[in-house]
Amino acid sequence: MSTALSLCGRNLVGFLSIACFNLADPQILLGFLSVASIDFLKGGAVLLIEMDKYKKTREIGYGGFGNVYQGCNRVTNENVTLKELWFPDEKEGVPSVVIKEISLLKEMEHSNIVRLLEVVSAVNENSVYLVYEDMECDLQKFMNDCPKIAKDPDFIKRFLQQILCGLAYYHSHNILHQDLKPQNMWIDRFDYILKLADFGWARAFGGSFKKIGYLDVTHWYKAPELLRCQQFSTPVDVWSVGCIFAEMVTRRPLFAEFSEVHQLLKIFSILGTPTWPEGTTSHLFANCYSKDLAAAVPGLVTLEPAGIDLLSKMLCINPSGRITAHDALKHAYFDNIEFEV
Amino acid sequence: NNQNMVSTFDRSEPLINLALQSEESFGLMIEREREHLPKDDYLKRLRSGELDLGVRREALDWIWKAHAHYNFGPLSVYLSMNYLDRFLSVYELPRGKTWTVQLLAVACLSLATKVEETKVPMTVDLQVGEPKFVFEGKTIQRMELLVLSALKWRMQACTPCSFIDYFLRKINDDQFPSGSLIS
Image 1 (cartoon, chains in turn brown, red):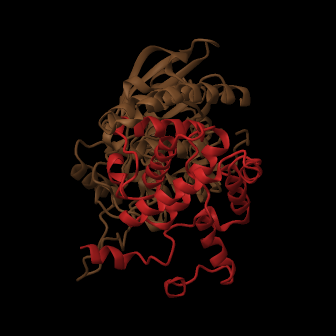
Image 2: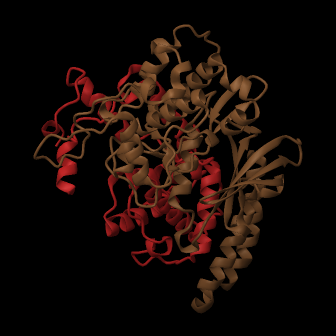
Image 3: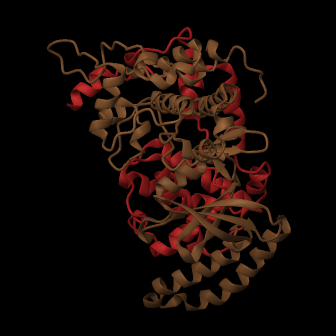
């Protein structure tokens, strides 16, 4: 490392002493400096890992900030997933969300969270690529392709435990996922390890914060407080996990309506409409009563009573009454699981 | 409407049980803080003159100026300084070329505000206080990328501020102190 750096430093000095020559004319100065400094940055190529290192093999998806590709490392032939992040505006520089997202991922290290291998720059394309370890299958696909295994109560339990483990780790770092859905959970078909992925909207939070206008996660898994544009925090992720838990058992999305309003009405129709104390305009779901989940959703009859109990605690309409990921892991539902994760 | 929102959430009480409070995560934070420091020999190299202390001073002078101009929060200065020191400890800037120092200062401040502030001006507009050199957006963007790669994109530095909650709790019998005590 140090030799590479000092070499590069020497190159720079050589280049810049020529560059200096022109600096006398203030007219040329501005335009010239940008050229000069770009070359100066090229001198830093030892630090900037360029996109040439990877080959895109197939486009596999489309995200809000760019496409997602399957790719491979040209040297090691190792398969990877490449997620592109565009920089829409030069004047803005590297966008703040990009910096936040990547630097958060850099702090994450957990067996149930997908690993970010490195960040490569494609300077000419005005973007960077996030290089993730490759996982060929997501939970959605797994449920479709391997219905037998996915239906097995022990597998459901193991998957749910892994989802909660990853989520608890996430929350312990003050990070919300905000976009948990089966498509964002990757499964390794060899050892059935599940990893949370795609942190497009993940962001650090301090205590509580308000919904930001452009945030839009798939509303099927959205918690009622998100649908009602209230303040929200970690409980929104637990709600999503509850929805996914039910979906694994019944094999269909629990609340799947075409609009956010219908989504909320559907939630109330299944879980019961909360009542608000008279004369207040409180934003909290103050007095909630819960219908019997097993009775309201017939597909849940196959789930053991402890599972029903955990599910209704995760789907508590009032966010402050909802179980946390950490506590959910201690729930009796997991008592008879072999601890392998 | 907003009033209501505030009243239902008491700011002095954390909404959820953050892991901050446990001893284990306190240990993790100390570890993380260490991972966000300049290389070990940085101070020695600054003292011995191997690294130019003037460069650091010059960069910080301008950062303070721009910081005051935009009224950024205290953490933005701290983060800029952290990025600047970490960058200088791993990357050798060409000596005597003052424009590279200015470009680095702009990039560090711009990155820090993007991590910390909610409202961030365009990078070109950050260049206030009549600096000797003014750069185009594209140039600043490239410098940002260079700093990001040099710091391995680890921008969520654990700062002294990250520990305040923990110690406030400690001196208050493991209870979260009321809002009045904090202010």
